[in-house]
Every structure is written in C-alpha cells, then in structure tokens.
Image (tube, rainbow, N blue to C red; front, side):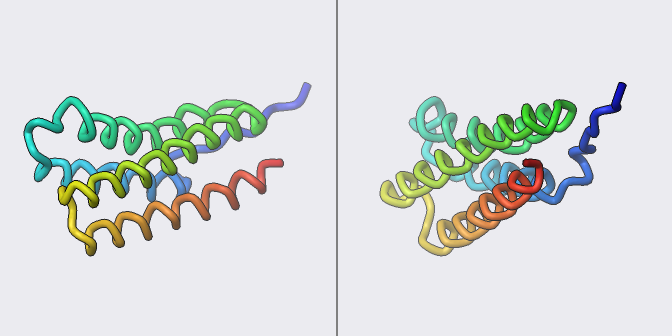
Length: 120
C-alpha cells in the first residue's frame, strides 16, 4: 500500500499569489458603484476567491484530482480577466489598475499551468 503525496497549499506559491489577487480585488471593489454590489462586483469577488480556494481544496486530493481543481482555479482566473475588462470599459477601474491586475493574473495563470504540468 503506497501513501499518496499531498501538497500543503499554504506553501504553494500559486496559492499565495492567488490569495494576493483576491485581496487586491477586494480592495478595488470598495470603489465600485453601489448598484454593482450584486452584479459585477459579486461576480468578480466570487471568481477571485475561487482561485485560492480551489487550490486549497484540491491540495489534499490525488494529483489527478488536484489537477482538476487547478483547472477550476484557472477557469476562474480567465473569468476574472474578462470581468476586469468589463469593469475597465465601465470606468470602474483605470488603465493602470487594469494593467497591474492583468499582469498579476497572467503570472498566476503561467505559474499554475507550469505547476499543473509537473503533476502529470
């Protein structure tokens, strides 16, 4: 009987970066118009929180299952990217904020895909 390897999510750089993204998103959502509270703001918040949450949940699973949770986290990051473009278009965030968040999100995507490839 072999012991299956588990990952400590708190030690994973991808989890730490996803947590930073979620916290940065939370900060910018404070400035969104009140009428967006249950629409775009809520969607942005949910997908940013989903990113580190799915890494944490998947980390105690087998590598194959963990890879599935990483897919979900990546999907949330691409959803977030789209929602940030909508927020920029609606002038809820400026170009500088968009560029910083996009760069951070794209770094997360690159790192997560690399980590995921190492699981296979």
